[in-house]
Image (cartoon, rainbow, N blue to C red; front, top):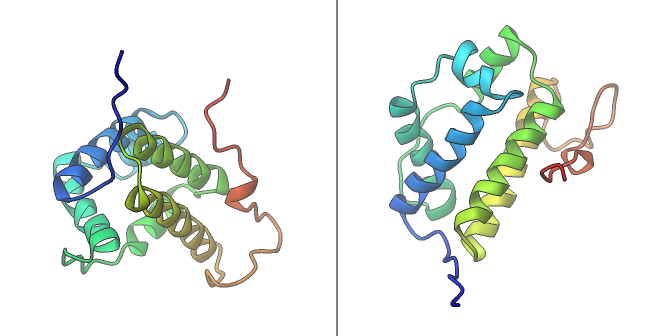
Length: 151
């Protein structure tokens, strides 16, 4: 029996496949899915190319993503507050999607970047600069959240 070895993220096509896998799980998730489906009314066919531009720029420095990633999240938070648990679940699903398809330095960078982005969004929504310690009422660092699938 041979073992299929996952390869690293390498190009836009890999991102497209990864993002479809991730958003399929995110849309179906009972905690964060409603933010995509009911609150934002996200159309995957519109959202996926935009978010692929974001990740292509973040990981490969090749796409021209020039949108403000924070504003849509602030609008979601205004409609229904986003918490550390929401961002922790996003990170959990993101890491699982990456790990399910890819291994290598770019995949590791994608997971680390996802966690940094989630933490920065959480800080900004709470009115703190992402560079602060995060201490204060109600703050739960992402590292303290359960980021593995329940056994």
